Amino acid sequence: MKNRYIYSVVAAALLGIVIGGCSSSSMGSRLVPSLGNAIHAGQAPRATTTYTQIELLARPAVKEAFESFANHSITDRAEPYADRTLQSQIGTFTEAFRSKTIAGALQSILYPNEIKIDLSQNTTTAAYLGVESGGATGSKFGGRALSDDIIDLSLGAIFGNTLSYLGVADDHKEVPCLTTDNVAYQSKSTTTFPYIQSPL
Image (tube, rainbow, N blue to C red; front, side, top):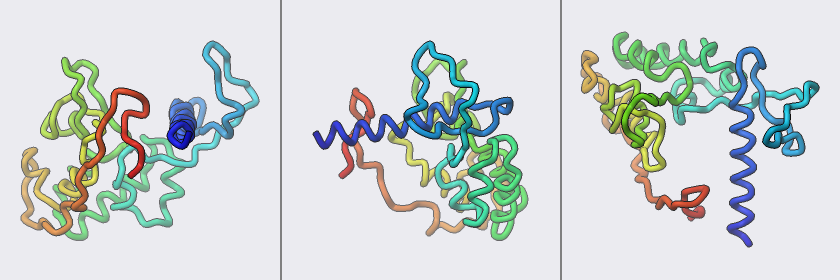
């Protein structure tokens, strides 16, 4: 019963994220206000329904690493391609301790705040930042695998020499103690939804 309840909560949360993430600039930034307004297959959405986007977090750790907390609310309500606050702060934060070249590379890789996939690739193996890195993180398909260590990949790019492997000039200003959170992936994937084990 407990597991069924957890799955129901996860499914409800994912439904809200999926429907809320399917907005375009013509619809504005929106999120389902309640599960009572959920759209059923083949049913057109009500013209009077209004949605409010309350979160924008495609890339974990990016806002947390680069933005001041006061700016999270601005970013949460911005369109991925119109978030000049995040784009600017990636550069400002990085230039405080890394080269302008590294800062510019991070801006081009981590902005816009979305996860890219390349459907032309003849593979189904996901790899976080795979499109942006030309396959250096595992495959050129991109996306995000459940086992991808997103935080370490991000920290390695920000504080380590990950970008030098991609041809960006090394500024030799790495901060090795900040390149990992020292938390390994310990979950086991399953073949049924939600494809991860119950919380430990």
